[in-house]
Image 1 (cartoon, rainbow, N blue to C red):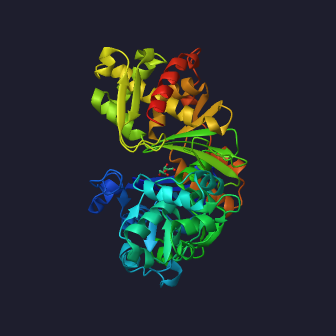
Image 2 (cartoon, rainbow, N blue to C red):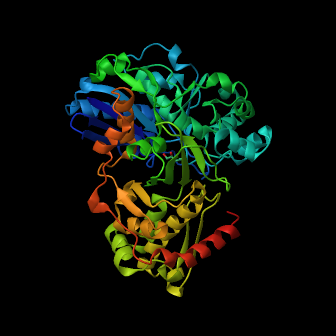
Image 3 (cartoon, protein in one colour):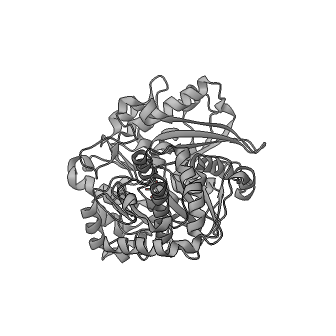
Length: 521
Ligand code: XUL
């Protein structure tokens, strides 16, 4: 029993959460926002603006500075890190960091200097492609062709070759900057990079996040020779080992002991991707509970005993940090699309909720909005596509309440369609992320899926997942008892499907399917 720290480096912020397994309480939950707190990196939404909408990169030093900033703020406000018994965490998935030296070969971090000035000279690539990048369609095709087609990539890695996945991104780097690629000794994911900073060495990549690279062989949990060879020459020597998620990857380095007061020898457990970490934070590592996470991206995910892949090619299979597998479907048009509709209709968040709950009905009288305000990965649309179908006033953007309902219904119907390959329709869905706090959005999910919706009392399920994983691996506290204490649902937020509502969606579902098929999606 003790205190465990979970970190989460997501698209827009770095969060820290400390849990106390003796009292069953979260004792600390704090974040720094990259855009607001580190404006010198000129990344208001966590990535560097670029003329090309397909290119989405971030400065990895921003993530390093965020770590020093957050730990410094916490120490200054009285956090005693010497009581922490173990650390784990998560990073936004797929993003990669390129180093000219192996981190295990460099001298220990000097606590009299900040960390970013010690990392800067080690980078072989100044920026990191992140999950929002969609610039690698050519490389995806080349990788698939080299191994004998899409089906082979899916069998090996659990997903088709996907633009944002790390393998195609590495291949694009090798082709566009061959010298810098040749000068690269080690490639990390955001998650393993964060863990490497903490241990002052090269941390392995875990099976949860590693499966989002198109390089890991799902069946064996090792790097696939075929995919590695198809991606870029010499890549095998540049990848850290792949390990099970509960592996202790090292001890906290002296830099953090001297600077922030951690106890020498504090174990660090492999970091994982933010979605696999949320699977743990949501208490959903056993099959049977689906999770809908509504943040910058919307994701639908669930634990799976045996890997089983999406015939349409949009879904993925990743390692489940508690053992076995998980499936995931990711939608780029999450918060941003909802915000765009709120902005265009002039509705506040409260009015948006009222519009859904009080002013409109399930099925929206046939009004339909195609919700792709930015390029989408599920279905694959490389250019934005927003279209309205329905009453004259609706298509002229003059029905604010119907438009609020329309964006949420289209997102929920698209989630339902694209998660149908997982198996039986879920009867119980756990929700997380900012938008899930909106009761109107929870009601639409309940009505479309015909499922009971539950939200957790603790927010930030990915940072919580990090703390829980540390408690399980270091403190040997079983997940089942951790879930009882920390993954309890908040009864006041429960939502059930309205009677008869689910049936109202058959027409809208049909209309959306026709549109998607017409778009080749
Ligand atoms: C999942 C994905 C996103 C990021 C967001 O495949 O790309 O959900 O992990 O941080």
